Length: 250
Image 1: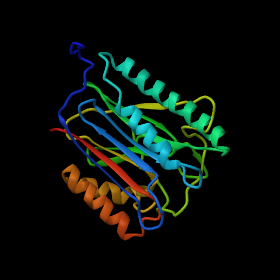
Image 2: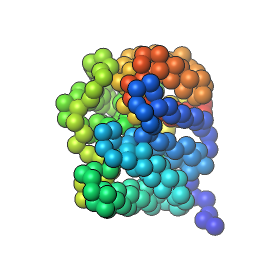
Image 3: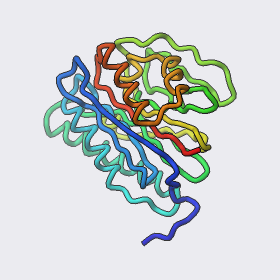
Image 4: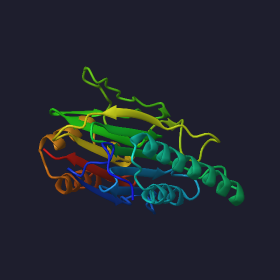
């Protein structure tokens, strides 16, 4: 048994996750992971229009869910990256065996540490951070042809277009290339800070300002999830819809 250290995850958080096929797609190619005990949350979005997107997204969350938390945060991040790299290689082998061009998925990951939060991602699944009444996109979409809506820590209001039915062309995904690169950013870990991990089925239907307004309502994670899904489904839910909300106690 590993002794507890300062790098062990804190348990002072509440989280909730949900996924829905939506009103247009015939199957749900999204998947999610909620592991408060590990300080690990993830959303994966299988690539639509390609073979077995649901297989890819499920493999990602199942493999991440098998991880055990090592004593050091650096080792945990390395284990997450190693897991995603192994899934990347396996998806490429499976695609070759089935004679298809690509079996892939995006993924967004949130990792809790005592002093900070880490957001990792591949593709255009997103992590948002709500702090001091403001919502910002912590991740940056790996895609051409979209407004990334990047907002630096120090300021400026991000200007984004209204939700659109289609996005840009992905430049990175698990299963797409021989070598996988995961981007990471550090976010605040303070009482009351909230995080949203979501597939693009959320941000296709709900703009960032409206998301911010929903967070300002100060709802418990299950109630906030219900509001997000009620809104996305009422607007047609043209894609699979998946979200995880994590709220730090305070």
